[in-house]
Image (cartoon, rainbow, N blue to C red; front, side, top):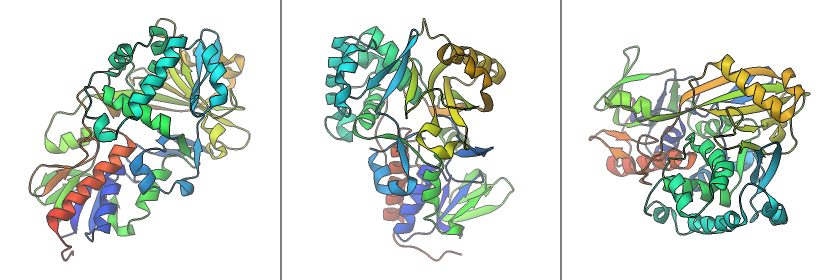
Length: 421
């Protein structure tokens, strides 16, 4: 026997599961197909730049993230609580006036929405913050777009703010995601910062993995078959344990379980090196033109090097552009993006160097209704458990919560440790 529990996948859910198993006295063995931990959360290094693989951020309010992560060690750099929204030919600042009360007059004058829309934000905030998470996920459910319409928000407010902001979170341009997921994310934005670790998003899984013994994670080990209390690797090697936890992404989990994969949402992220940032400050920039006047494919833009100088070498700035979908050929998409950027920032865009294009067709599972907050692992047999996005809502919080829930259930089911080896 190689371990008490084999965990398939070293993403956040698998790492949280392994850490909780270790704390409970059991010996975990994490098998990871890649050469690093983190799953989709990854940071590449290129010519002195740090490139997170797609638009990824940490919401500091997430309860399980606060409990499991060492925030000071991550050296988190927070975005401004709001955004810069491009409407017609100008950028307008949208602020969370509960956190930036000095911006209240600016918000009232903003063309992002009507005065009534801005008052309705108070009702939405109260709704999203009411009760605990069990209450939030127990409410009558519809889509996010329908919830906004039911609350009376104007089409202008929806198109100029809610759609670019929250559709960019879910990679769902139609905002057809669960109203429960939408309110959960709204709560996170209202109660905490949106932040990046100073050295890139990969620092989150690296921090968790560093708490496990060196031999607890085996990289470059792709599991191709689960056979009771054993797994078979792509080279034919067989590993055994008292139980197996499947903690991969939903597509990989479906493949190992012989199921149809869940529908996924795609995104494309383009990175550019610029001599200087196109704007100052830690802002997220949104395309608020609406579907009839967007002017191009950009949904959002940010400059990670405005938050942390480590994201770019001295004398350079890093610009990240995010677009919906992953089907457009990179050179064609870049040409479309550059035309739009030139309209926003002028001729200087011609001197920006393309660093990388990340096409991510499986960026996130679709989060249409129904969505549940059941974070306990799904037990498929006496020896097989599933955690992570295959059974829980996709987010850093739920990934960590699901992994811990799986480990807690396993500790109760298996009792104490056995002799491994």
